[in-house]
Image 1 (cartoon, each protein chain N blue to C red):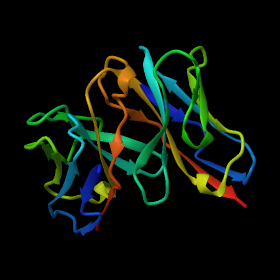
Image 2 (image 1 turned 120 degrees about the vertical axis):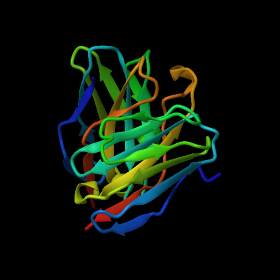
Image 3 (image 1 turned 180 degrees about the vertical axis):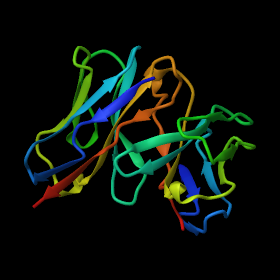
Image 4 (image 1 turned 120 degrees about the horizontal axis):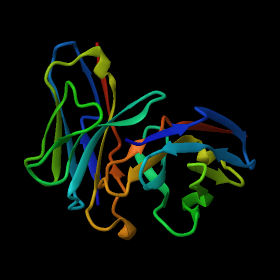
Length: 117
Length: 114
């Protein structure tokens, strides 16, 4: 059982280039999330999805776009990369249900380290 | 909106000594509370969570946390740490009515020394 898989694990971009990070989960989770992790700032939510075909903005959505065409996949796109987007990106997923039954527990991928020069 | 403050960015501790990681939160509504751990070069995994009931919550690897509503705190403790506990620890909160979105603190890096 792979859980949450992120590709690529590492990427170096030049300013202005575009790229897509792919997140795939095999747990049939409804909810998926993209976070970025920066030193001293914890994880900040970029975008999230509560189901196939739906997306919503999180805390820091500017400069990013997302798509959830299939339930198991959640793509994060950078149309024109900037040095401020140098970060480690984490995808996570969780299932719906009652909080007491275990919903709200996120399963994380191993992360994608992006450097923008 | 809610926020989470982890008061210590780094905590060095000797092996077999106790450790406490402090977490304070602010929210105008009731929240659920979590601690996640991130081992080097890995994603985050759940240590423990508080949803309701007993304010003392036990998690994996001998960790426990105590919810204090009056002080809006959720401090994490372990009575005796191992080298393998070297990691970054994140406190997180979720509003009870906000679905599954978590707000994370800035993290506390624990370095266990032999």
